[in-house]
Image 1: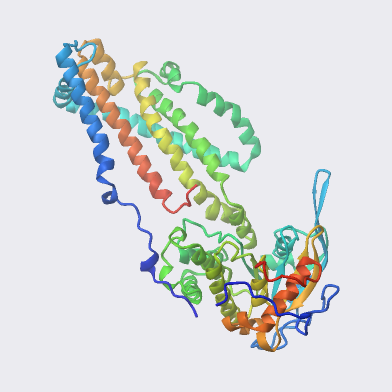
Image 2: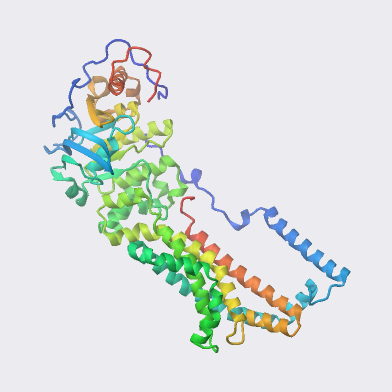
Length: 311
Length: 270
């Protein structure tokens, strides 16, 4: 496990594993070319076209998102990365229908976001676990099922299945306050998976965790995605996290929030997002992709000591 | 790769009675004993008359001798306080739910609540005795109920507004109906606050029910007993009744405190 920052190898690393240098990548067929998915449906999980989001407060106008176009294929793992205020969380909230775009269109599995929310097409996990403290862990996981009228026996079966998936089978009867932060976050992920969604929306779910727990959770997430083959839209601050988990990393910049570039993470050394193991963290391809993302984030090609900053 | 954590390693022990440190119990007991001993010595040594302050031993004698009367008084006052507390609690909670649903009601209630929380409610007792008749306990119950309803209303209203953003958004992503949101998130969030309000109100209920007895109404109850014992110059007996009212007030407080702790046991520390 590498906890220290990987120092990128010298030389130009805009290599073969990065995407086109200019313009947002809009092609819907940029998903993982290989993968264990059996017959992925042709319709994209998320299709965002020309979306603007402007917050108006009295006379102030803040452009949170400007002309954002991006898509997530079924089963694909896409990260949104960028500094605070670049609108990455706003974009995720728009997809989740917790907010509406000022202009542009968003579709989720070919439907409007509102319809997708009503149909429970996605599961969501926030930075805070957001568990209901007065419910046990198991009944927290069962909450979405209960709200949608699933019977008690089926709920119990599903929650014990999910508890096992996130490695907390002994904790079903505990209350959230008896769990550590990392364990609470696992429960939140289990809850997001309760209705077997084909799409997971995750807003910095590991943001409040320490680095060691975080890397373990990332490994878990890779496994869960492989087992459920859900598409994921993942918001993060951490470059290594984004590169490790994703098929593609969407790099965003603030004021106004827009997409700088989309970096592909893959190639022979890294494989698809479902094939990542701890060894990938030491692979040269991983360092190259991290360097490429960092370069886009800083806006200018960095040639000096760029291994200093870790996130 | 799955890191299985066993329950034993992380189970957080809950506070139990036996975990209370001996010092935490002994220290106040020692202070109490010293206080009573000093009191007894002062009364005996300085020859203080009972109408100024009777000796603890004299009060104790009256407590033992009149214990059935004192318990009767506690039952009458306690019953008034309890019924008043339940009624006031109900009114407070329902009012808070209405205020949290409709902003208009909330704004209309502000001056009324402010007025009621400033006015000493027991001052209404004589008026209420005229309204409901001096032969029944209704006036005393109403006094206790009004006194209780204010802190319960304020705390419940606050609790109903404590629903966290993440819970609200979560319910939105589940496309939950308004009724589901209230049942699943809003009411459970507010519950510990309701009991905080009741705990604050509990001693208020006893005090109000007791003081209301000073202003008239039927015979019976600790307040009446204190005034009549004092009027007949039986000061140690008056003090014995005062002791009874302290015990009653403490009992109300402790019971509501335990109920509150039970309901707040899984709430995150605020």
